[in-house]
Image 1 (cartoon, rainbow, N blue to C red):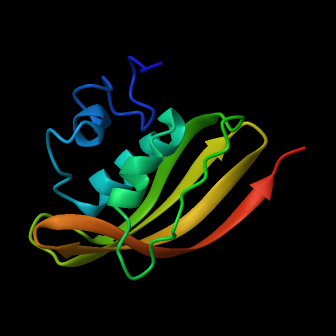
Image 2 (cartoon, one colour; image 1 turned 180 degrees about the vertical axis):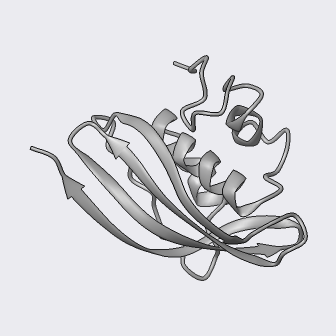
Length: 127
């Protein structure tokens, strides 16, 4: 089921991350890519996650747990990653029922497309 509200929290899904998932546009910043990847986790779009993962760190498969319900995204910090940068970092907290993922992600732009490289993260279970 396609959401009306974008999981990343910035507005209408079709006009926000949905256009990236559909291949109608590409994220212009590292933060937009990070938000769209969070939304891909929320809507179960493993193909988008693989396509936006840097080839040097991309896993063979992206297995999503359909039982995980992502509930909110909080951006904590940005370092570079703008429309004219070649690299950037975004620190965030992604909340799901049962826990929180806190990560500082690294991104690189190649051939005009932002790609997720890797990140330093920790997950916290809420009980």
